[in-house]
Amino acid sequence: MTERDGRPQQSERLLRTVALTKSFGGIRAIDRLDLGVARGELRCLIGPNGAGKSTLFSLIAGIHRADAGRIFFKGEDITRLPPFRRVLRGICLKFQTTRVYRDLSISQNLLVALALRGPERRDGDTAGRLAWALATFGLDRDGDRPARELPHSHQQWLEICLALATDPDLLLLDEPTAGMTPDETALTADFVRRLNGQGTTILVVEHDMTFVRQIARAVTVLHYGRVIAEGPLAAIEANKDVRRIYLGEQ
Amino acid sequence: MKRRWRALRDALNGPQDLGRSPGFWGVFIAATIGLLLYPASGSSFGLSSLVSFLLYVPMALGLGLLWGYGGILSFGQSAFFGIAGYIYGLVAGNLTGTPAGTIVALVAAIAAAALAASIFGYFLFYGQVSGWIIPLLCLVLTLILATFMGQTAGYQWRVGQVLLGGYNGMTNIPSLRAGAIEFGGTSTALYYLVVVVTLLLYLGLRVFVNSRYGHVLVAVRDDPERTRMLGHNVDFIQVQVFALAAALAGLSGVLYASWGNYMNPSTMDLLAATLPVIWTAVGGRRSLLAVVLSTVALRALADSLAVSGSQYAFLVMGALLLATMLFFPGGIIVSVARAWRRPSRTRPGAREAVEPKGKGEVA
Image 1 (tube, rainbow over the protein chains, first blue to last red):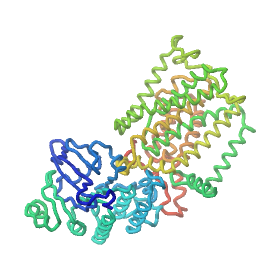
Image 2 (image 1 turned 135 degrees about the vertical axis):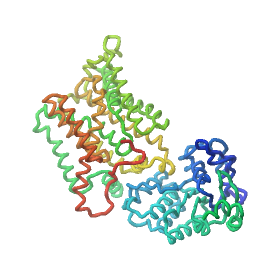
Image 3 (image 1 turned 180 degrees about the vertical axis):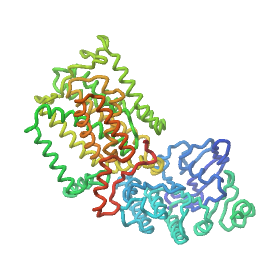
Image 4 (image 1 turned 30 degrees about the vertical axis):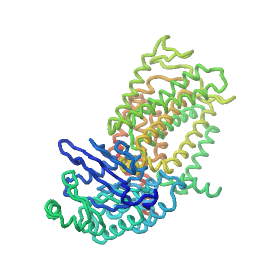
């Protein structure tokens, strides 16, 4: 995966933000934020409510425009690109609240997500990966079933599959396990780890520390729109500041 | 060959419209045969009336596509109807005697409607105009055009040999003509033309809404932001479907001008702007079939009521729209079809998406 361009993994920043800033009204949701994500990483973003995690995702995905600062993806400045062009370059987002097409069936949902790619562009890798994801989540049956009839967890999974259908290099998962049972959370964690193992870079916003412990190798802690700590999970959990402002609250 | 045939059948019978049972197709074929045989027994007045109902079907189908499938309500379809009708009159009137003059006029008229809609739609959708502002701006466009055309009386408002005619309208518009066949107002030829156009459009649009593009269109209606985040250029798709709906309204406009040899500003007044919305809403905007049936039925109803005074007919139309909005928000025909099928439903979940309403939808 990482050898695609013949460069070593760590030196290649897939995503980089420089002094990224976004305010809503008088509140700075993201405050001169610098973040770097290497190709192949699986990283969790944690932080208290209002720390700017979802805002950061919406800036990376292009839903909101940054007030200042730059976003680079694969070395290219994407700060002013519209969202659909970012998807075509390989960024896809799973929204915080589940957003599937409730009135459409499972196969129709997938048809919308796959519609951009003709059969010739859908290489074996992507198709195989999508088929594997659907099978993992039990979404490969009952294709005619409307999405609104699916249990909440299956709707979350379907949305992850929709994102995968766009063949992303960077997958942004905003609270993928919200409302799931412990078993479902474990299945999701296992899936995220294996997807990452196949080469997809993944950023996860998550409140559920059990889930974070199940998947994370690296953790970034946001507070008031800034990075206050970054590192391996164990170091983060031992970090006094982090314990005080975030983990201590649980 | 066999596979292609099956793909076409699947596309025709896909989940995005009502009527997929063998029974439906039986009735459809019977109705088609009935329509094709009608000239053998019907009077020329009956033929001409039927043409005057069917010629509005393309415009209504365009609005069904735009509003029902794309989630964009427009009171502007009659503007594009009017643009195309007038352009057809201008071009055909100036090309009388030229071979294929009316065909050139037909193409120019539909292209003009689509171009006008593309420009107007560009500002609407790339400007991120949304919600109720869109139908209101469309209505404003229509009324401005109607007012403008209304003051074009007098000899100075002349293009080539054709007078625009102000409120009296443009007269002596040539009927469509292909070689030796003239599609005049009461001719059997025009009847067959309109019937064939209606059937082909209906079947073609069924394939269209069941295509990938059709699914993306419905996705834009249900959740534009999610669709954007799956890599679709939502603004461009909205402009495209807006232009397509305008082209269909334009086709109706050309057929109208060819049928009556006449075009006037009242085809773009407030009432004319509202009628397509009523036809589409009352039957059920999320079904092409419902749109076709209710357009023909309501045109026929208005025609029969007009005998007792035209204002009375509009009152009934208004009441129908109100009743639909209150009791059948998805449309009367769609509601009846769903109630009909529910007891004998064999495939759970094979229902259409006919529930109002999507995130990107207005009204």
